[in-house]
Amino acid sequence: MSTSTSSTSSTSSTTDAITTEVIRHGLLASAEEMARNLCRTAYNTVVYEIHDYGIGLHDATGDVVADAPGIAVFTRGNDHGIKRAVEFLGADAMKPGDVFILNYPYWSSAHTLDPLVFAPIHADDEDGAEQLVGFASCRIHVLDLKQKDPGYVLDSTDASQEGIFFPATRLYVEGRQNDDVFNIIRFNSRMPERTIGDIQAQVSACVTGRRRMQELVAKYGMTTVRAAMRAINEHGEKLARLALADLPKGTWTAHDFVDNDGIDLDRLIKMNCTVTITDDEFVIDWTGSETGVRGPINLPVGQTEAFCSLVFKAMTTPDTPVVAGNFAPLRIVTEPGSVMHAVHPMPTFTLWTALIGGEVVLKALAQGMPDRVPASSGGDVCSMMGLGTHPRTGEPWLEATNEAVGFGGHAGGDGEDGIMHLSEPGCRNNPVEVLETKSSMVIDSYGYRPDTGGPGRHRGGVGVARSYRFTGPSTGICLVYKTRTRPWPVAGGLPGVNNQVFLNPGTDREVVQGGSYNHLQAGDVLVNATGGGGGYGDPLLREPAAVGRDVRNEFVSVGAALRDYGVVVSADGTVDEAATAAERASRVPA
Image (cartoon, rainbow, N blue to C red; front, side, top):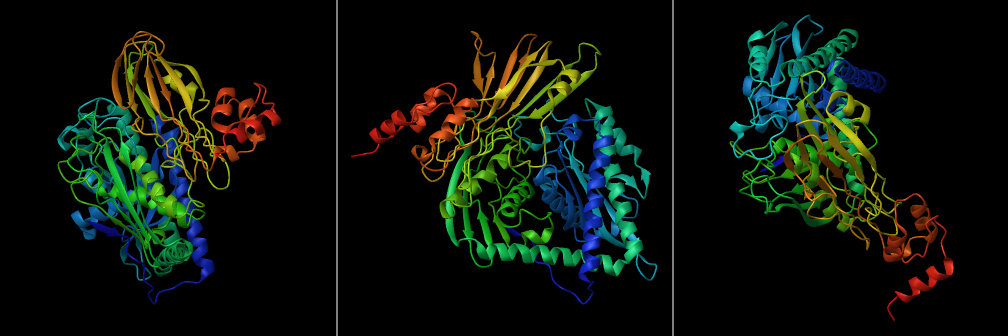
């Protein structure tokens, strides 16, 4: 299957550039207000602390014209979901005041616990006739919608095990709450208060977006706002095509692996990517990726489109807000039934293929443009989720956080140390104080992992390790799916150290694992240890003073400085210049 964004087209209805820019900023401000309202009203720390959301304002076709960055892949997935809902229901069936929920994975672009809530926006035109002008959307991660296991599903083999489906269902009917739907949610959730509270926060965000777009129409007129939205996307397309013209042309293929699918634990799952850049297109072709994947790491095609869009955006128009026009030159090819294009009833709950897959695209691009593409990061979001019964309140608790990873070295310098993975650039991790207050977890330690960054002329960033000690019976869910392959380097660098999860480290019960569902007792410890980025360039060309600084900052050990960089350095970071020169000279082939 091949998908591409439709190119925008000019019409006779236009508006001047200044008015368009004022409306564009009005839409962006409205999206940011939607995000603020969401974070102020959500019940779930994954939303208001981590910013696990995707918020957008869209034109009447569903194309995004403004977003508020959170998890970047959500926004393009929102486009896909709205368009599928319109196909299913018809735009005429969407009435003023309606608010919909959609979490059917093959339409919504995500798993069941990432429901898309969206509201059609109607306003009066210049003749007083009410018309559809656009949509407001909000996607978040909610805590429970009757999936077979509390928290997260790692081993489903059929979509029916992954929760209750809402195929573009009305939460509000012409402004009135649909109690029947909320009652279904209430009686099908293990944590109904928090789940309903979060969904109502999504509704609040969408109503805010609807109100603000209606105010823009009231101020400037329907014709002007519609023309401005067309102009916004036309300009976004123009910027993308200008950037495309500047990229090297060619075809490059790369592959990487997901550790397993949750069912066949010894089977690496191949993601195969061929990127072709021409004067007119940027094609990402996933032909050759694994088929027959039984576990829930299969991706809805909207999710594949979304993470590919994120990489394309980073390569072409990284400095401007997301609009649908940015993606007009992008074409994505998938095979229905493969891990990159799930079809009913293939399970899709564990979406980590999308989080890892973006760097497979970069791995292909690095062959043709190593000066523009960094080495691999630690390569995973490395999420840890705990749940149980709170010892102080007796209430169920569920808290999660994503850990930072090291970024890959690049032509311009070292990779960043310990930052959020590139699939979630608008996100944060959950603070220690929040986790300890709201759960029965204690954070024993949290810090950088020395010697995890791939050696290179430009060093890969180091990962981090956080140790969770459980004070009562709990479940610890580890969502880490790149532990069996190392972060790849570029231009002669060396790989980074891969992600690992340790259960009860240093004891006779130690287990090293990745994606896992652990039933824990008081005193059990999980250490989430994230990977470092790959190195860029020959490590023997790294400036000795930079290696000394790394040793002083405890990013690189004295032994690794000698082994990987040929630098003789003391523990305080002082470099022995003469010994270093001799050591490096001894490594040069005769």
